Length: 117
Image (cartoon, rainbow, N blue to C red):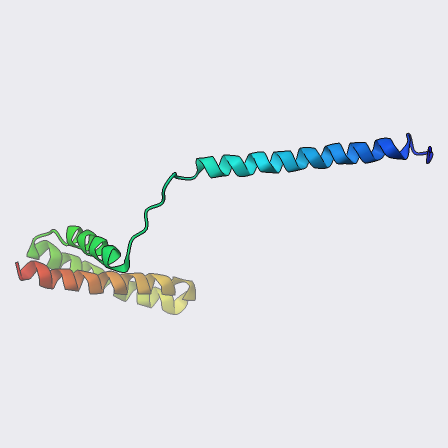
């Protein structure tokens, strides 16, 4: 049963089977490596727990004196105005405007909480 391409048909089938078996074994090895590399136990938070964590992180960002917080608000207002001007000529900078607006709003909230202490 020689087809004239270098060997019997049956040996080609065995070669293909060996190759596909090697590929499957390699993929199984890679999958097992990823499974063992992943953390053993993921930690999930409820919405309430996430809100508490974010609140605590926010408080640590606000831990400044009222004068420092006022200076921070002034500086962020300047950055916001400058980024708006730059975004008029370059629309790719719109994200910067949003970032500075969010930081300015947060700084104002911090200013109120710091001055209330």
